[in-house]
Amino acid sequence: MPIRLALIGCGRISRRHVLAMKDLQERGRGDFVVTAVCDANEQAASERADMFEELLGNRPVVYSAHGDLLAQAQVDAADLCLPHGFHHGIAVDCMEAGLHVLCEKPLGITIEACRVMIEASERTGRILSTAAPHRRQPGQRTVKWVFDESGLIGQPLSFFHQYRSSAVLPGAPGQTDTRPNPSQLWGQQPEGSIEPLPDHKRWRRDKLMSGGGPVLDSGFHYCDSLRYFFGEPEKVYAVLRSVKSGRPEQFGELPEDTVFVTFTFKNGITGSWAWSLAAPGEEAYDVTFYGSQGSLRDTTAAPFSIFHLFQRTPEKLETARLESSDGSVYTMKDLEAMHRASLSDEEEEFLYPGGATDGFSIEIWEFLEILRGNREAPEIDGWEGMRSLALGDAIYESGLTGEVVLVDDVLDGSRSEYQDPIDAHWGLR
Image (cartoon, rainbow, N blue to C red; front, side):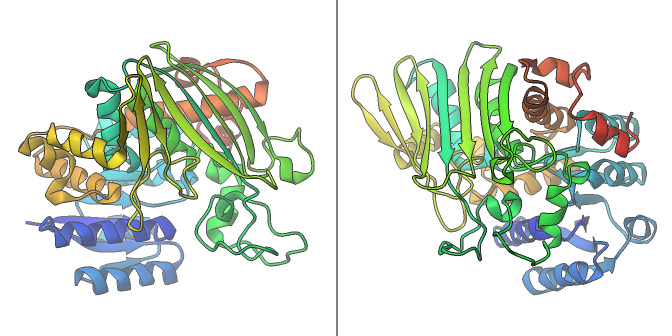
């Protein structure tokens, strides 16, 4: 019997989930059916139902309240694509109703919210998986192989990442690049604009609903990738600013647009992440990882490369340059071929089911395979999702207090100054 899924939350990111399910179906991995969709905006839910009908041949039942869906729909699991503040409450409701849960990143709006979700998963015996696609793509799988197995750059030691852009919003005077970019989500409105913000931008500017700005949102991917590459972080020191507000010292009221972070990992690796969406004039992007015997540079030109390392999109492959101390040079194409040649047929299918390379497709397939009993546990379960969030929240805690912050102190709740108002709003403390 096909696994019955419900899509709860029908905003922008849910479209990628529908396309991923279509990709799986086309690869002969379609032993599932979406029986219900839900969104408080009934028009959005209806549009997603239309999309499912067009692309997958089945129209789900439309709900405007998740309580009605849980009471009435025939479902085995839920795919949550919601504003961050709704993750913990709706995930717990789903698990208590007997559903397994795949939850979009960040897992919870705060560390305490993550704990509530993990406790519900353990209490009910339901699967809780964090949807974080980028580490699952060939680019980051290849980079992990380079660092851990290839020996091509020796022992990883450090990394340096900088990004500078004025990143004006589409529609602003002089704006000619219409591709999605970070400022579409977090940037300031063009001066003099009286247009209301659409829903997907407005809630991201509300700390009590979003949990933070870009460091927590797309930055979750960055933090998860660093943990995937290098293991557990020890401490961070961060300076965060909202420069375009006209008050450079301000942080917290508006989403950060200028960030400086220094990372120290428990294995001794150190790195820096310095970026600004408020840097008019000359733009720059560079991220390079150094080892004892060479370097690896991410040369992918993509608007979200500030957060998404070695990113592959449907439109464009990731690019990179590896240079060893012996003078050898490799492209990402070379490295991926070497990585995949090292895999057995079983390992290839495990990482790239049916040849899939889209991270959304792979994370959904993994979730389905766990429900079928073919895999033991999610790669990014609730605990992993919480640890990646803790790195982002440590950046906020440091930015707020001006102090070096131990990531373990954020994990155990002893450092929570930044998160306290959010937890209080949601009744988590």
